[in-house]
Length: 79
Image (cartoon, rainbow, N blue to C red; front, side, top):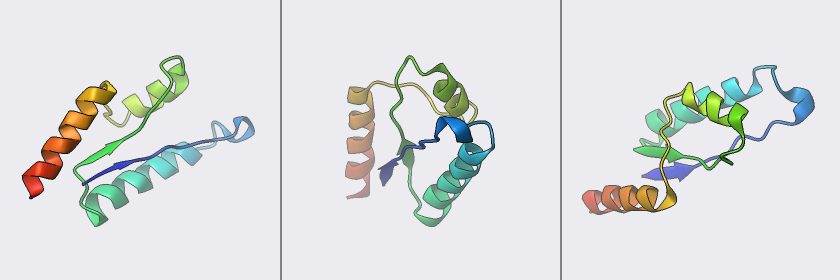
């Protein structure tokens, strides 16, 4: 299956490792426990800090139509 997620950190909490902790746990739980094949997120293209953070974890840029096609392919393959 697939899942969407978001991490929201208040400005005063930035730079304290909360996002890193959350990301590690989300990925571990999603892929290991839930056996997801795809975990995706949306980010504003102008948010360079968020894009840089997600790039560290190997996320790839895609557009919504491509993502939906990939999700449909995964779901059909499981039928």
